[in-house]
Length: 229
Ligand code: CA
Image (cartoon, rainbow, N blue to C red; front, top):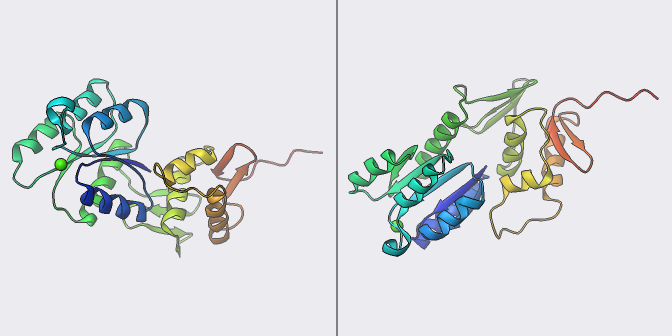
């Protein structure tokens, strides 16, 4: 999952980015409305965390302007607005401008995570939050994975890779698409990182659960039938 964080407070931004990365999200972060709008016009994200009070607002606009511009382009990327405690008007304005939810600062990371999951679930049109395929079951809310009822312990990044593959079983995801879900801008990417996580997943789930299409990518499902000789 790729998140876009718009937050001018460096301390909040830094701790939020780190915490979300630890949860296995790829996080990209900008500090002002100008950078936010420019980025949102050129890149796709699964979810935006948007602070409303942003610097140099007279020139560049604030978070609401970013949100309105996004919705005017008919971009439906989910947005959670982050607002100050006393700014009730901001929350209403944010929701009216097309935000999917809001959080009042300071907030607990657990609550942010729960709201992000809820928003992503609604956005995906899934009433059922649990992903299932061939005896494999992944619950984004509890972050639990089971295989034929047996619990499987995964690291945050192994979980992120499996979640990406389980969202569309049978669909091939390229190495670049998987890296996108694992890493934000400027994060050091080991060239073989995806292969390593796939290797670990196969070790834990069995060699036949994830298939590699050489030079194309990976998918969750059965291996292709053998060609007759
Ligand atoms: Ca701010």
